Length: 116
Image 1 (cartoon, rainbow, N blue to C red):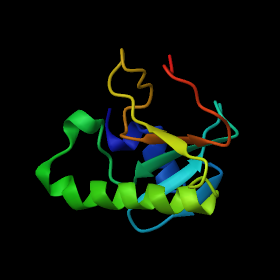
Image 2: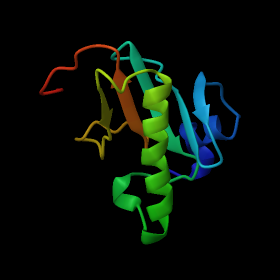
Image 3: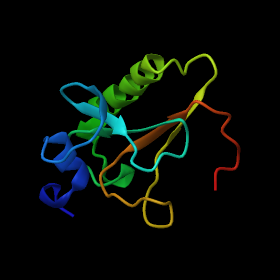
Image 4: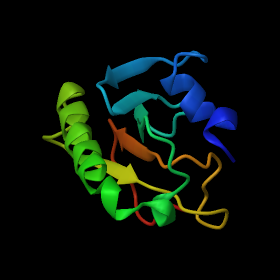
């Protein structure tokens, strides 16, 4: 899949609607359309990267920024006291359905283990 065909790239470029909750120059977070928890957000880099397996050494700063952005977003939603979960699905068997690296940030309830 190319960036041109990617639904998350289209959302990041403003070509498709999403309920955005956080945005900066490199990262976008928006509500999941099929939430699995009271708070279920998708956090993406604006740069198209298909999956964690496609990360390159030059993406190191972007990944660090992405993780620090999730910390800000968790605070924005008052999740730091009770906790939350961050999930990254990789490949078909891992549950990845959109091939643009993204992280699910879930919270607002007791999240059980194992997840699925």
